[in-house]
Structure formats: structure tokens, C-alpha cells
Image (cartoon, rainbow, N blue to C red):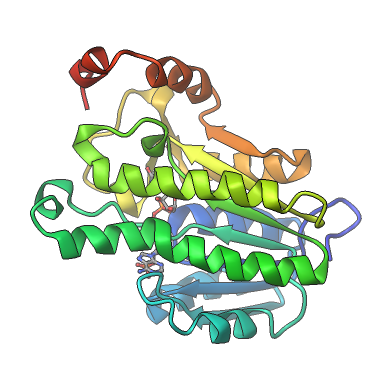
Length: 254
Ligand SMILES: NC(=O)c1ccc[n+]([C@@H]2O[C@H](COP(=O)([O-])OP(=O)(O)OC[C@H]3O[C@@H](n4cnc5c(N)ncnc54)[C@H](OP(=O)(O)O)[C@@H]3O)[C@@H](O)[C@H]2O)c1
């Protein structure tokens, strides 16, 4: 259960090795998160993230195998993840950018990007939401992206997958009204992480660090916010970009 200050004490992370997830977990452990379940496809990376949380003082840290592109073992995955009892917060940080230029000519690779960013997390969220409904409380925080707000030619495979996940989460959030379970969608812009390693960042006011996103997530938990933009001013920039006429939008850089 959440503590007296409303901070989650048990957290499940899909994409437990993600830089953004790790930064968020460091903050949550500092505010007394007592149990973490880290899920992802690479055991070595999960073990590294788990060791960091134990060193920071989290008393119980488990790792569970999770591959968003193969959700056949979904029931077993949910059982294992909740084996230690109720989970207060599920953070969904699963994602991959892919190689847009190459993937446009490789439908199987494109499907991998779409299932990692959309279909895998969405189906898993359904199973987790059902579990949280049954326990009668909980919070879902899902990493979407500004890339899904208006999909660009330069990354339309990743962007459309994020757009799908974002829309799915808005519908799921509405379906959870009155259940005791709430969902927050987080829409970061460019974040300097392993995912964007080697990419040219946009100018400073449009670039965030994993720590910036973590702070925004923890703040959102306190505020019960439904949607979070990081940096916050992206909300207004995207409101304009979203309504630009298509010929003008297509001429924008990036
Ligand atoms: N970085 C950005 O600019 C940015 C901007 C907006 C939104 N986001 C979103 O924020 C989230 C976290 O990203 P990040 O920047 O922290 O990147 P990251 O460090 O690369 O994290 C990506 C995570 O996804 C996991 N993953 C990859 N393929 C998977 C699969 N098939 N099944 C399950 N998990 C899989 C990775 O696990 P392994 O480590 O085992 O591969 C890793 O934990 C993602 O959803 C991303 O789309 C990022």
C-alpha cells in the first residue's frame, strides 16, 4: 500500500533496465519504496538495475523475464510479478526506436518496433489493469512520447506505435474510473538516454535528462495528473504543431 505521504511502496517496472525507469526508481527508493519488481528481456541489464536499487536500500528487489514481442506467457508473467502481494505502481518504460530508414523496407523489423512500443505493452496493461482492479487500488504510469502526438515522416513507425499506445491508455484510463486504479500518460520530448545515444539532441529547452523525466513522474504521482509533458512547455508547442496545415508541418525540420 502507499505510505502516509501517498508514495508507492511496491513498484513493478516493465523495461526495468530503461534509463528513465532507473532514474525514477532511484527517487522512489529514496522516498521509501520497499519492493521493486523489474521486468525486461535481458537478465544481465535487469540484474545491474536491481543491484543499484539494493545498494540504495530497497529491501526487496526481484527480476522477471518479460518480452513485449512475445506475450504468450502473459498470465504467468502477471502471477510472478504480483507473487509478493499488491503492487501500488506499475511503470511502463518498454520501448525501442528502431531504424526508421531500414525498417521501412523490412516489415518484420517494423512489426518488432510496433509490438515493443504498442501491442505488447497494451496487451500487458490490460492484464495488469484487471489485476489492479481486483486489488482495488493502484497507479499505472506509461511512457508515451511527443512523437505520437503528431506523427512525422522521419520516425513514423515508432511515432505511430506511441500514438496507438497513447490513445489506448486514454481509453483504458477512462475505463478505470471509479475502480481505485488511475493511469498517467507521460509524453517526453527528446531525452538523453541509451535509446537516443549518438543522436543529435535538439536545442536545450527541448531536451530533457532521464532525471528530469523521473522528477516529473514522481511529481505527477503526488498530483494524480492524467497527462504529463516533459519538458512541460512541450504541451503548448505540440498544441500548435498538431493543428498546423499538413503542407506546413511537412516542411518542418526533423
Ligand atoms: N529517450 C527518449 O528520447 C524518449 C522520449 C520519449 C519517450 N521515451 C520512452 O521512454 C521509455 C523508456 O525509454 P528510455 O529512454 O529510458 O530508453 P532505454 O534506456 O533504451 O529503455 C528501453 C527499455 O525498453 C526495454 N525493451 C526493449 N525491447 C523490449 C522488449 N522486446 N520487451 C520488453 N522490454 C523491452 C529495454 O530493455 P533492455 O535494456 O533489456 O533492452 C529497456 O528497459 C520508452 O518507452 C521510450 O519509448 C523515450
